[in-house]
Image (cartoon, rainbow, N blue to C red; front, side):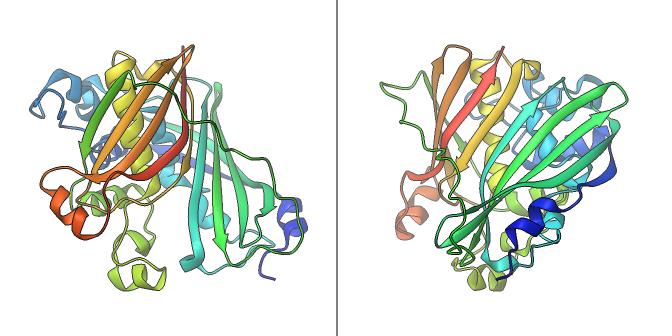
Length: 303
């Protein structure tokens, strides 16, 4: 069996120094669609967008933590941890949890410590929980947990792990917005550090079981958080305390995301689907996709 759960859990954490600059933050923001706000039809020079793209007034969206320092030690490097030897074509990002300890600076240097925090047996797949804890000279900054599904590697009789499924939100959403995904969105987003060929190479995508390259789940994750911050949190990135999601389906570049939001005490529940929009609507119908689930069990906790 390529995954040795006991060995993976016992492995020494890996610690490395990461650095990032305002340019890295700006590139990430552009990769998740900053510079345009379809709700207002605003230009890239709108003040609400310049806070994501102009270095003199830069605010850092907390989801930048998933790529800061090119995500090192990140998901791909974690798949080479002791006890783990898997085929990248069988790997899917199942979910993500981010806890913010302090507002993220626009540039910085920090130590990132990564380890496999849990290994679960889901029968047809194994799930690795890969934890990265980041701190600078002033103390903890953020903690990232990535849930990684490895298809075909379950079935050894291990712990199935806790259920993360939530009851869906009830009633009409407080806000619904649509965010178009550019045809080249994945090519731009991958420059922030995730060079998995699944998101760029059609031949590799076919090996992984997809008709064409898919958008990074963490790109959808970032687009969604930006929509929540911009519409329900007054554009204040420092209000975000934690952000968790389960990746329920894929997004193809060129589609449109529909982001539904429900206000609750101290948090926002979110459901995201894809496939509709103009002009992607007709193409999505040809693909048999319309309002296809993308993000589920999604919560943004805030002050």
